[in-house]
Amino acid sequence: MTDRLYDNGMLMEFDAAVISCTQIKKGYEVTLDRSAFFPEGGGQYGDVGTIAGVKVTDTYERDGEVIHLCDAPLDAGAQVHGAVDKDIRLRRMQNHSGEHLLMGFIHDMTGFDNVGFHLGEDEVILDLNGVIEAEQLLECERRANRAIAENVPFTISYPDEEELAALDYRSKLDLTENVRIVTIEGIDKCACCAPHVQAAGQIGIIRVISSENYKGGTRLRILCGMDAFELIRQRMDSIREISALLSAKPDKTVQHVKRLSDENISLKKQLAELDRQKAQSVIDSLANEGRGSFCVFTEGISRDMMREIANSAVLMTDGAAGVFGREDGGYSYIIASKNLPLRTMAKDINSALDGRGGGSDEMIQGSAKADRSTIEAYFGNISAVTQQR
Ligand SMILES: [Zn+2]
Image (cartoon, rainbow, N blue to C red; front, side, top):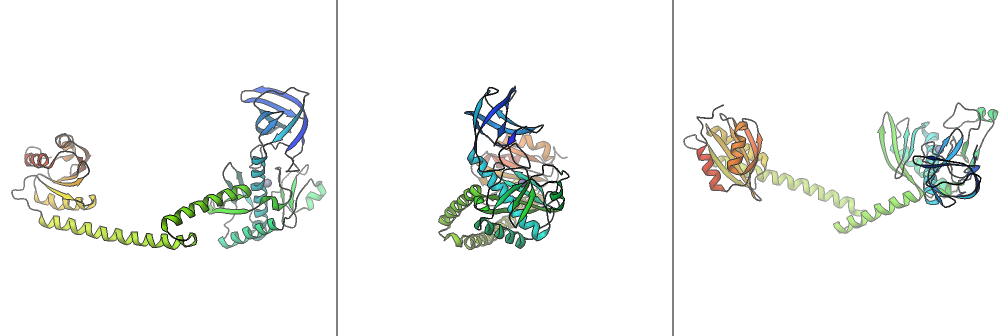
């Protein structure tokens, strides 16, 4: 079985002998006598890197062996130098160790456990089996960052059966042999198979990105270390841009946006009132002697209000009442009728008015490219008698 070297999480390079190499569809499965590569497990992806210059694209475990998926073959028996991709390992380790540290404080304060952990490429998710209060979370985050500042040591141990039975630790396992315990001095003990930092200072920073109620508990998104730094940098860049757009100091952007939003709401109200007034004046001036089909032309009136006009106009005709609103490249229209089968007529109407649209027998809507005189001539010709529904 592979001798695993990642109890020292900072060990990224090592020498080993190739035990076996088997070709599979995705590449070559290589086993070594010893390895610092961490195989996928506990919510964390397997390490990547190189062995003797050959790319390792994934690492996983099978029957106790660490399998390195390589993109070229290695000779069994060869002495090789392995190098874990340091950037990726460090990033994952910072996030994973950060999760243990934060969970240590959360568990201590609330008794909640982490019942789901995912360390993805750009997010770290942990699910708590209880709903944590915002203030509790903030306090745990603060304590975790304080522990980082104090550089609290992380240690790995393998207690024997007797020690294990007496040990209070998170992620309690049924196993009694080879249980790997990650201890953060004075803060947390948790069963975990992954590589960890040697002391909290290497985590750098822990930030809770979001917290939401999830399946009766809480789903937290966190970022630690370099990932947290990148996120903070991006967010600060974005605040700087917003602040320039608003001509406001970065710490005053919230008040500015709030004021803009209030102004926007009030302007929308004013516009709606103007729209209503314009529509009302069209409704007041509607006239149709003879009750034949007729149409009315508007400009700068919303579709909702055009519909109101159509609802009034349709009462004045036995044929169809059309409301046309001037817009780029033609008109938008709403046509209503109490008698005509508009839905079946829509095709003819659209072809006569160079338009598109449809709806029900009572009302159709769409747009038309025909000019005003063509539209007026068409409405003069719609028969209220021959096409009754
Ligand atoms: Zn863990």
